[in-house]
Length: 343
Image (cartoon, rainbow, N blue to C red; front, side):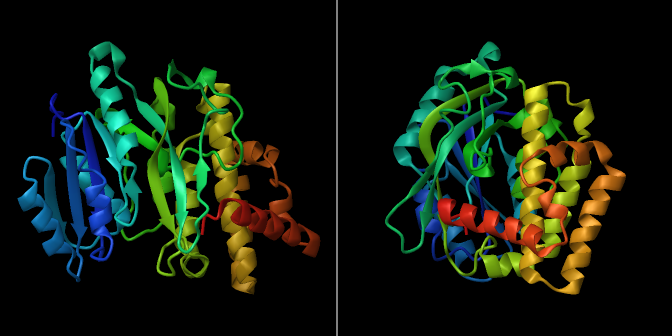
């Protein structure tokens, strides 16, 4: 579908049995400014989500549209929203999260003011906030020291990224046309595909802008969330699949920009660390074989990726079979978990 000039931003909300918290997500997008399109994708919900979504579309027909589909998983719902989007830019909002209304107004004002052929951006980055169940203290993830603030920049202008400053789905807005032209595909019935969504377009992005506002509020701590530790252990095969898909997605040796190549290497290293840590937490012989198979796959089938990942923090320790090596990985993961509260 072609982009419409009067729709500056499409916000897609993938939903599956989201009746309990859909109101907060949708209402956070209704800020009274023109140029916003909201697409609620009902991914085969069996609760009251379909009716609630239809009620919103009836109440706000100029802003909200609803797509009902058979269940295909989070990635399939995101792709459905992308295929239907008419906005110049595209943002994913998970149904249990929400957007800061003032921050969204700032984003819309910026996009509207820069709506021209020579002022298009491939990717806009904003800050996000971890909102953890039962916790009053909020953990804000910002990029002020990692990239130029409120100015156009390219990969050459990147600064040093802290381990917790990865660019995530929460923090990105893509130019819709570019995102489609990258050939992005997300596997069905697979969790953790947000990593593919963020990683795949990176080599195609030339022009970026960092707007330092707390746009996305990431609600974590519910037992049923995909990032809850017990669920990540249960779905480790899906985490491994996504990690392998990222490894195969781009050959790092062909990435000419050194700063982009290093950033992508660090992203792969983090994915390898998370996968390895959860396999170690499992601790079974089967899990240890999966760890060995994953590293063998990286080393034998994608030696250039292996070389880059090896240079990153914990790259060698992750392959150690000794008790100290396992302890290093698990300690590193635990510290990161405590500092950031990401699950």
